[in-house]
Length: 325
Image (cartoon, rainbow, N blue to C red; front, side):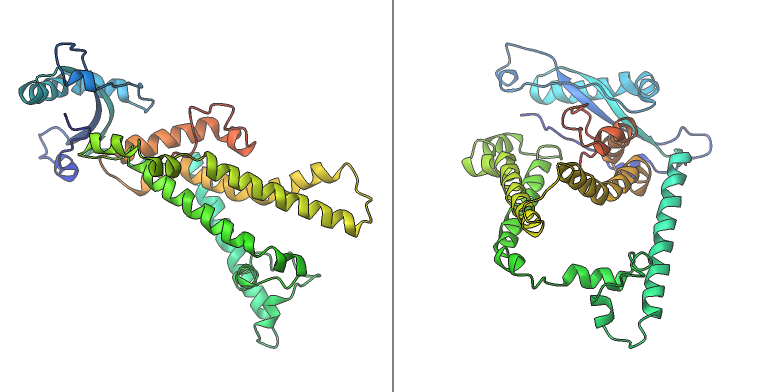
């Protein structure tokens, strides 16, 4: 069986050439085997090709397509008796320069603003702690809560504190379910990475996916249903508790206000992550597959960011996910 992945030395390909030599280039390409019904090996293989969406690909294809196809076909034909055509997905050049645009600068401005907020808020919270005790950070400051909302000390104690409320004590078992479901989510994503990263045993990987345990781990339906069930139960408990305090008098505006409250809590952090993926994530690393994956994600983020901020990304442009990782 031909290897699904084969890579040359990335750093060696991009070594700085001499002044009169062409720049070093490392290209990632997709190899699509041509049908050959006389080959028993071909009958075991099926490829599906998706065209690239990255910038400058037409230029790279014009410059390097022919020579890469000749090299690939020679090795395939000599080793496996197969013929293929190739499509360049991305290319890195030793002369590539980092380009910073307005969106990249906007992320830096937002990041600097957040660092300033955290620093000033933490300093102010510490300066009004006249008794120099940790209890100061455990109690809310009604009149000055806005000024200490970004305080590291106060938020740390809020994060690590345990509620003494009777209802929260009764629902502590939910923490065990949260831990289990989050563990399954992490394991599931780690298993899915096997399908998109280089592997030398493609047949072994395919057989693993026919195992019942692998099916349960990589199929997110059960995990997602657990999340939905827990969320529904907690929402019902919260609503009943709220209605009990109001003696059954609950306005119809409760639902839209509850949705708006949750939206305001989640969206700013989510927007910052999307902005990172749309700007600086691509520039933080290099590697043979980095540009192919990170620039694809950057393109989708800049194109479909609004679907994620409206939480309709599972229905609108679902084939172009903003975050692949």
